Image 1: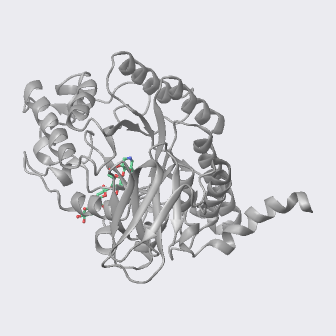
Image 2: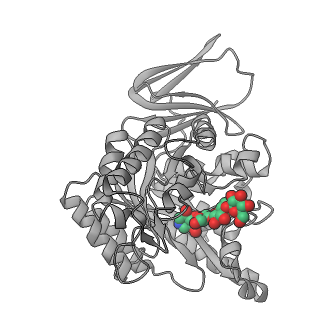
Length: 440
Ligand code: G3I
């Protein structure tokens, strides 16, 4: 019995644990140095900071967010050189206050373009509205204007989205490819890097997850070429729109992550969901949810085991708001929370893997006063460490970030005039990469 105790602990643990702030996905994700995120759609802007189930689920579980539609070209530059920053500003401000990162999605894509650009195509063929020079300057202006505004607020950018055709391993005939030529791909990364040299830059696509697939290999070969041309690319985004009963090949994905790692590139999971055929769900929902949980578990395990896969994002978090039934009506139930925001078996499978991993990393709560000293003075809290602190954040128990400092010093002073007598959480990212969390 004794030897089964640890196993028992991890099986029971999430059930006891759920509901308290400490056992959220991001709590363990931070300890494992991995970003766990979700896309948030239009409903986010009516719900954030309300304290309702939507708000608290996002706030407590994810340490990185991406806008499902609101940072695409049609939303951000609806007419030439006239930008709408409202929702991107709201999302980035919320993320900053709550200590989360943001993925920017996306800067260049063939889809969701405003009519002033798509008018340059007739029946999919470029019609002479734009010359190569004008379209390059439009694209450069879009990238530069947006990225410059969000320096330090958007840490990852999908610079280029879905440039490959579904089959054949060829480049898609987007307006960019037709009018500018294939070199638009190198150019967008160079412009992006110039606009924000601190941001991570990705090429993001779907159907490219498994090594050996025609599209996956085409993307790998193309990106290898970019690397050899010294194009500033951080890595690839593997969208991972999966189906529970179908298209998931663990060894192919593992091999793919590893070959990008060998190139010195990240390969991250950007738009994951695991959808279920509605008829299968009706026949046996318990079985389907359990199979789904196993898919999610294997995927998070792959990321935890591969050092270049330290971002793991789902395309939405509640089955209440998912693009799946609207686009593929035979399917649904693809995400981590059900329509009542109750966590599904898939949620617990991820939580378990993260909890297990966090035991290995040693990034645990500190109770060792030698590492970090916290002094509560009249009007401030003083945090002292032997090592330099890259980022210091103070949260209340609801997960609201009250203070952020990125001063890279070993002493941080947090004004405490406005703080009530309550429990607070201090989260420190040390320059050596360690995460330290202290409740006081
Ligand atoms: O905003 C309009 C609204 O005013 C109108 O009443 C309504 C009527 O249909 O449409 C609304 O726009 C929809 C938009 O989502 C916002 O809900 C568009 O029709 C719809 O096409 C659009 O779908 C988005 C899709 O990208 C477009 O390609 C999905 O929400 C979004 O989840 C999906 O996201 C993509 C990623 O960007 C790239 N990878 C694949 C992924 C899933 O398709």
